[in-house]
Image (tube, rainbow, N blue to C red):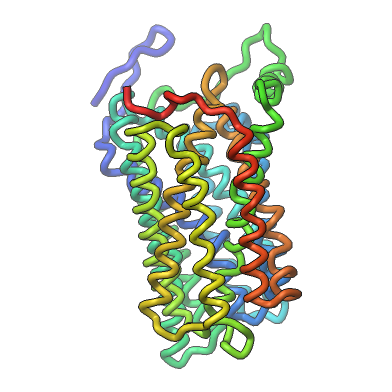
Length: 433
């Protein structure tokens, strides 16, 4: 039992080992995001939806993360972070169950999209509450110590979802279930996992005395308190080049992300590689995500050693040049699974390594007053930069075919190099002291 003083009165809260709740909290944060961004694409491809519609409509699922900064103050002002975590986990679990129930219906695309959007909105709200609760539920030295832990378990949830769940769906498909039933059972399994996480967190999440609704000072208007951080962000020096970097650094990669799974699944007669659902779960969801994590870890260490400015050009090349593997795969359509896995691993490792520069750039521009709100704004702009190009990538691919589409993606890497040359970076930023 730990004691705190609040408003002159002694308050008590139960101290809980962070290992009991931090890993599971960030597993719960990673599952719905991966379901919305990646698994939904594979699901709809297996259910016969066109690449144009898949890319257009699943890209709208980015929207809650785009507008997340605008309602994040409401999570502070109403109820506790713990309350929001449990409420959103309940909503995510219910949404997954509703998706499972509506897959066999005649209008499954409309119904499942609606529940995916509800899940995405709840997931974005959960991100706000969980990140805030992390700072309230841990002492400062624990916050620093568990940064790597939360990132690791978030990535583990991606592997379990993008790899494990997709593999399960493929296994069920191969065991005699038709495709809708295989995915219905898979989504019910995901919903069950999330309800277990909800019940677990209802018992193990601590009750920090500082986890209370925020109050506006009587002398400060709500409108002023709400909008001032936004005004200061968009008055930053060099804001136009900052916005250009946030929007265009990954302009090519954001077009690939909605097309890779359809390319892997489509039959060779349609220009795809003709992999099974389980093979995609292994190649893209397990090998790919593991390589992404390894690239990110190496990228963070590299910047720690030499600083962001030293690595920025190497990292922009790491993000874009490995996209050539998809040019190779789409032109030659190899059948060797080991080679396909290796190509995906190379591309995802490069992306993980190079994306570190993007993350560190966001941290750099958000230093100073309102850094938390400014980082939320930056991540919202990042999500917008992902959403808009991805929306039209399916239409482009269907107009051009896979070989020409991936050649276009290589041309689309040019803006990423241009904006990298425009931004100003502190030579010492990110380097160890």
